[in-house]
Length: 362
Image (cartoon, rainbow, N blue to C red; front, side):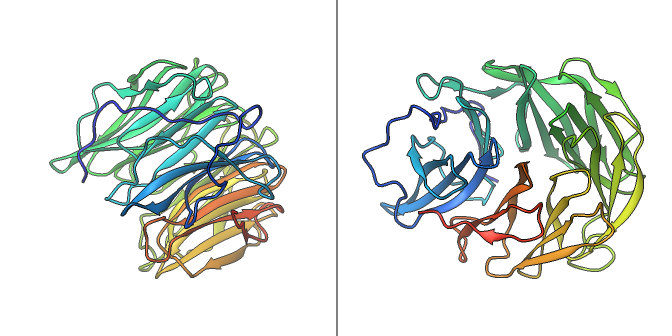
């Protein structure tokens, strides 16, 4: 694992509106997407890399018309990790964004006019930051640390604009295998677990006041969270990878009629692949991203889990990341990684996940 610096320099992300175009061509030759983040069905950002001077150079693109036209923005000073960590772009507002490679975090709050590093207080290597977002004037992140056969996963937080994030007291689990997830939209949800036996779950309407609640998933499974959709909550409950057979995962979809309410109505999900992501477009439309045997799978339902369609993405089969539905039935996902043999591509759906098509950039 690469040795990270605790504090990093900054992301140069400028708002789509009012930003002068750079003198460089819009899309660099050989550009391959690494991460995408959308603030609405038509407004999206793609962070990618292209070969230059025997290395990979970052480029940041933006669109306001669903990808028909792209505009090049200032790129973040985030190199492509040599350990294949996912470089994740998270845009939370017109002038606010974060980029993390799992061990470093960089951010801007004024469209790139000034820069602020983000530190992770108390984090000891090796660790991996898996989720990061901002809501209700606060920043939240899920960080998992490893060491000597034991691990810990905890929630980090800080005021929006703070140069550091700190562990939130009481929001932590320890064990041989630990994990966690968080989701925003209609409130904040946090799920932490260990060894497929200890599961904890909290909800908050504002990111300040938290209420413990019964976990979304039964013992022996792990929860993947989606934001509140039309006042309802959807969660994915998954067994350990490789069950019931290699290259598969047993999964079920569960629903709650309100934030903090009990989950019920288990609906089976196709087993193919190991989980890579989960997102819901509505209470009845959800997609699971999975990978197995060199093939990517997008399992989607538009009727609450009663029936499913599976889209296969066989060309890359390395990873599926940034699965999200920013609104209006529009969803996105990145297939592959820039420096992988098969490269990477951005896929988009406009019907809640029923049909996915590659979105050509440039």
